[in-house]
Length: 110
Image 1: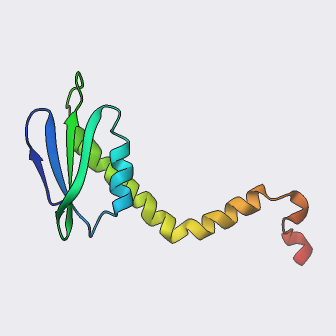
Image 2: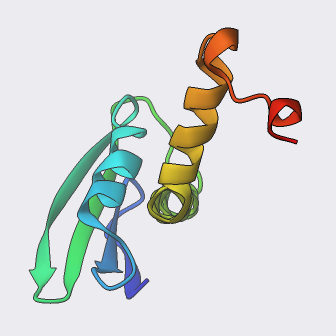
């Protein structure tokens, strides 16, 4: 993370490196907070994106920046794991949900 700026008690800015966080991960993490917070995403510079987080009326700020950052890391890790193991997962799911007569029986091959 490049930096966190507290604008007011209700609003914070987080500047994120595009090198570490994909666009989809930033938007997915932001979406999880839109029920209680106003979340804005905009370019910061060539290598960064800025996320503003502002509490909606009647919602306490608490430690929202830390919570958002943790959510963002979790989302990016999910995406990285899917890139690495997505095809394997699809094979396992297809095998698990295929009809029994189409599943390969290892005892028949021996």
